[in-house]
Length: 292
Image (tube, rainbow, N blue to C red; front, side):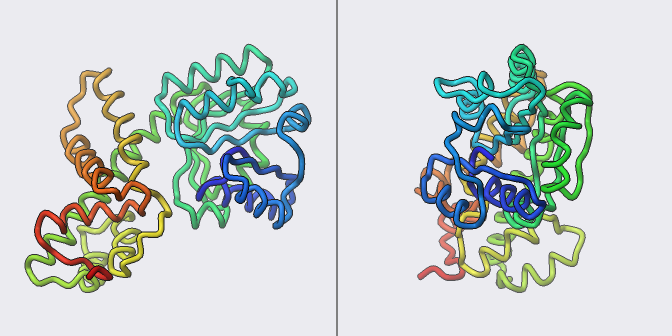
C-alpha cells in the first residue's frame, strides 16, 4: 500500500484483517511506524517490490502516481511480470490509459481503480471501487478488492473508464458539499439552527449523502480532515479539464470550485472540506458552531 493517508491507511488495515501480508509506505515516517505497530510487514520498498502480487497506489494525484510507478525510484521496473498495479487516485482518463500502456510494456498489469466512500468505509473494508482493466488485472487484484471494497463496479476491459466514472462522482460530490454549505448558512440567515437543519433536511428530498456526512462536522465545529478542502481544487479541476476537452459547459462545477479556492485562500486548505461553509459564513457575517 503506497500512500497511508486517510483512505490508504484504512485500506491497508482492511488488507491486514483479511489476512494479506501487507506493506505500508508513505512520505510521513510516523504513518509507516504506526502501521508496522499494527501488524504491517517490514521491508524497504526496493527490496520487496519483486515479491509483490499487487501494489496499491493511494496518493493525491496523477503526478504522484506517475512518480511512484515510473519515477527515479519507481516501482514498476522492479515488479515481477503478472503482478498488478491498482491505482486509486482521481486522475484524468487519458492519464490512466497511459499508465496502463506503460505498465503493460513492462509485463505488469494495471487496474484503473478510483475509490469512493470516505475514511470510515476505507477502514471497514466497505469502499466502492469504480474499476476498469483487463480480466487478468481484475483477477490479480481480486484479493485486495475483496478485502477493501463492499462494491466493485467493473466498468470496462481497459483503463480510463474507471477514472471517467470517478470524475462524474467527484463532480456531484464536490457540488453537493458546496451546496450543503450554502444551504446551511442560508438557513442561518433565516433563523434555522444548523443542528435543526441536519435533523430536518436529512429526512427531506433536499438531502444528499454528502449533506448527511459533512453537515454534522459543521454542527460539531469539528473540521478534522477526513477529506480536506485541498482535494477539491484538484478534483474539480480535473472535471473541468475533461469538460473543456469535450466542449462541455459545466457552470455549476465551476461555481463550486470557486468556493473551494476561496476556502483555500482563507488558509483552510488542510481542514475538512465541510470548512467551505466558513466562506459563506464570512461573507454573510455569520458565526458557525464552535467559533467565537
